[in-house]
Length: 285
Image (tube, rainbow, N blue to C red):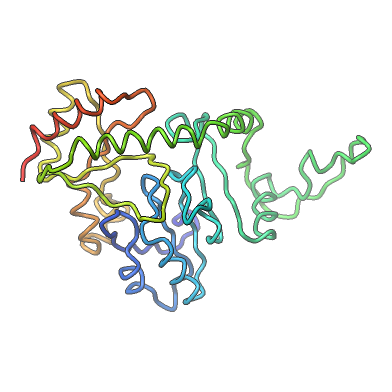
């Protein structure tokens, strides 16, 4: 998204939560800096409150990548209220499952109106707004900008509205799975878990652990038909971002150690304990 606009992307490092480290962000702010993008990895809040304050202090726009944060609350309120824009992602494997779709929430009403217009080919009146209260249809409209065909569709919205009824319940079960995982790993010196901020009620889109011999552990799990993931490789490992290589050592180290364990709603206590036992058997210092 940043490169589409021919802007310069600067990477800041992560903290133990695997979210942006505010100190690292502060070191990289220059007079050319315009915005900060905070990724709530796995539904975690990390030091989001400090990032919000940092952006206010420097007059920077804040974009919250909330792709994993459907249902995450900070201090009891849905996360994202403090950002200029919060961007959500919905698909079959997200906490709010639909087919591929998404949502952008803007703090400023003018930003919302402009984004709506640009997403609909630059047309200043969508079909709904062209229908009057009396039910007649006003067919005239103007095209005020060069826009895009980026708007969502009613089918995805209908699915999401139904799924929204179950979001908090499903997230509560994900948090229960995490409790079982944490119980299963209690006392294991070869395994660590990224911390969750105390005032953050995470959606728990991911449950991640860190082990030194990550690839060996993943292979052992696969041999038992347990398919873990890695979220994510260090961005600077990719050719298009190689210019940032070496600038984020903590992110680089984490990308060699992290494993995302199964946390879907069909798991039960016995499944979780089986995963824990296999990992404890194969993890090394």
